Length: 78
Image (cartoon, rainbow, N blue to C red; front, side, top):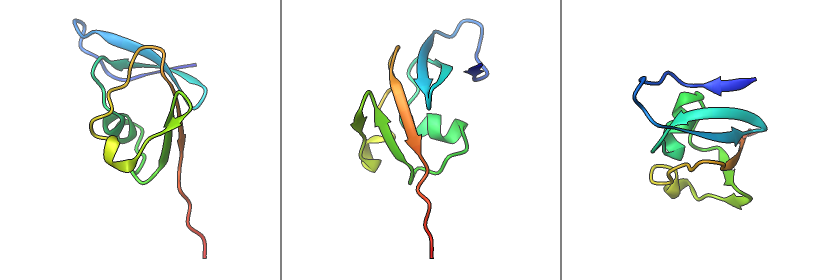
């Protein structure tokens, strides 16, 4: 199954994998925007192509064609 966001007809797109799911996003989408689209809080742990991102990088990290993204939600227990 492919996860698609709402796109304008003239908008360029990129294809990438997010948590083993094919995903199509608008070109220029940041990591923070992807998390928001998915309803995920930014305090999640995120890896792109095997490298963990810092929380401060989420707003400026622009996703690229072919990226492999892994998002792990941080769960606190008590």
